[in-house]
Structures are given as C-alpha cells and as structure tokens.
Amino acid sequence: MANESANDTAQNIGPVILLGPPGAGKGTQSRRIVEHYGIPQISTGDLLRDHVARGTALGLEAKVIMARGELVPDELMYGIVATRLREADCKRGFVLDGFPRTAPQAGWLDAFLEKEVFDKSEKCPPVVIQLLVDYTQLLQRLAGRRSCPTCGRLYNIHSQPPLVDELCDVDGSKLVIRDDDREEVISGRLAAYETQTRRVADYYRAQRRLVAINADRTMDEVTAQIFAVIDNHFKDGCE
Figure 1: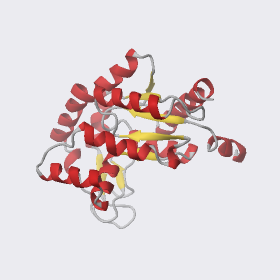
Figure 2: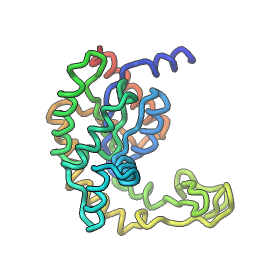
Figure 3: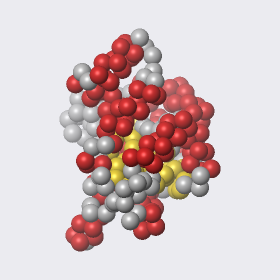
Figure 4: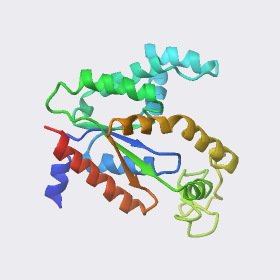
C-alpha cells in the first residue's frame, strides 16, 4: 500500500475538473483527490481573497469592483487563475474548484492549457468528471446541513448526525442552519446551476471529454469511482 501511495504522488495527473450541482460532494471529493495524489486544490474564491488581502494589482482591481456589488469579470479572473496555474506545485496536476463555471470560461481554460501545458510532455490533458445526484437527494443533503457556530464542524441530520440531537459533538454548542442552506436559497442555487453551470458539462460532453459518475452512492464509493477515472486517464492520456 505504501508503494502504491508513493506511485500515486509521483504520477503526472494533469488538471482535474469536478462538475456538479451544490450538494454533489465536490468539496469532499476534491480534498480526497488532493490527499491521494499530492496535487493542489485551486479555489477561485480563495485566490480572489488572497489577491485582495495581499493588495496585488489584480486584487486591488477586483476589490473596487466587489465594493460596487458587482461580479468580478471573466477577464480579471482569467489573470488570477493563470497566475496560480503557472506556479511550480501545479506541475504534476491540480484540482479546479469553482472554475470553470461557464462555457466561455471552459473555452478560455482550454486555450490556456493548450498554450501553457500541452506543449510540455510531462503534462496531461484535463480529466472532467461530472457528479450526478438525484434532485431529491440534493435537497436532502443541503437542507439537512447543520454547522457548529463555535468550532465550524459540519453535520447532516440525515447522513452524518451529531451524537446528541442538534448539539455539536466537540463543544456541545447548539447547531445552526447557515443562510445558504435554507430551502428557499437552495432552490435558487440549484436553478442557477441548471441555467449556467450545466452548460459547462454540455461543453465538455460535446468534446467527448466528460465522464459522468453516480454520486448518489456513499462517499467512499464515489471516491473509488473518481480515482478509477483519474488512474485510467493517466494511463491513456499522459506521457
């Protein structure tokens, strides 16, 4: 097992893109990919906050836009993402979190990877994995979420309940429902996914690069499916 783990963290994995609606488990599965293969997770939200905090030129420009209550435009996000993907720890591969969210972003990413990555033999083309979850299951996952306001630990009253109803296992604080986990907000988030982010899946499907897996299964079963897709992709698409 140790040798297998060592091999996993020495492979050139290439870019990994996880697609799926809120509640599909992208965050959990991204962390498992990071731990298993030893590649970084690239979160556009984290990148944006980091640039703002450090006062970079891109961050200052984004800060002004956000202060007006506007969305950061694609052209600015492209610069932030490109800067991060050029760093040394992305050489073997990376997991993208929150990007691409639209078909134009997917097109930009393809062009960037073609120019910056595909001409280097040590890199792999991206593997795009779509997590499919039944709508009712999504509602149950999202509406069942509870969080501890003290330590931040997350629970789900259906699948991962606390030992004592409504109380945190760690510090006994009363669990709360976050605003974005309320049913009326959840419906809006899923609708936004349907009208915007689903087009990213259509983009990759049209190129025959999309691998869809059943994410209604347990977390471990979903992880096993994802690892199998990545391992097969490595064998077929990397040099």
